[in-house]
Amino acid sequence: MYELEPYLFWGSVYCYAAVTIMLLIGFIFKKERVLGAIPYVLVPGFLLHTMVFIIRWSMTGYLPANGDYENGITGGWFAILLTMALVTARRDLRAAAVVAVPVTLIFMGYGYMVNAGGQPHAASLKSSWLIVHVLFAQLAFGSYLIASGLGLIYLLKDNKQRAGAESPFYGRFPPLAVIDELMFKFVVFGFLADAIMIASGSIWAKDLWGSYWNWDPVEVWSLLSWMIYGLTIHLRVTLGWRGRRLAWIFVFAVLGIIITYWGVDAIVKTGQHAFGIKSMGVTPQP
Image (tube, rainbow, N blue to C red; front, side, top):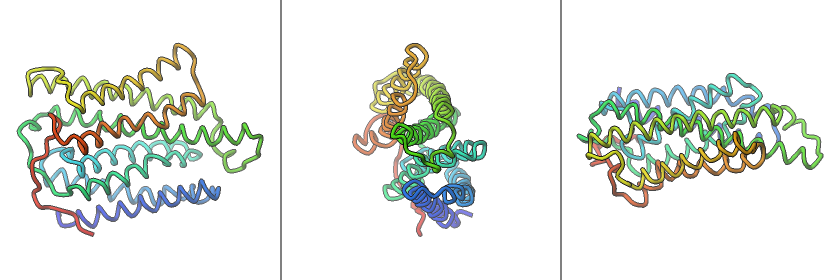
């Protein structure tokens, strides 16, 4: 079974690459039919991705969350899962994959290039808290990616309306008020999942290191990112911020999450979240 992983991995990558190209063609050349065909490529890619996820879990014996490759697989899986749930429920929002799919493609590729080998299960990871902690972390990541995509769609449609230009392409997207409400709901969902991730991580840290908080770089960036999204919720609920101002924040706020999950480890390479030990020598090949 394990020898199938490379073929399944590259099959999913090629599907996501095709979806990314379809998104570019759809937005640049205003081809609604191309966007409408996205699920026919995204669904097979997700099924292949799911099989990679299952095989990797079976091979290593733990939830894939050890190293950049496994984080790319798991984070991308949750992001695509939430994206598919949205585009299935709202056919007029298939373009909402504009951020989630390319980001998933990039980080799966990045993880493969850094280290696609399985890594031994460090003693610090042998806890049921791993599943809870990672599950809510990736749910938050996927939600923020979708909110970023919806924010981008909001800005593009709003720009057309402000220019007074008739655009049948953007006219087929939901009204701005609907997009605004959806992107806010995904941020709230991500914020709550993020809070549970931080809380479960703190409980786990107490058991591992004797302290709920250790000012690890990943912890610091995670808290900062969570506070930024909390601020946007406050601005919306208390001060009534809506529309363009929040859309701009949502488009770029996800960068904080990306730095937390991948950037800190790539630059610092030390800290209590650096669980990887060495490769098991199982590397997917094209």
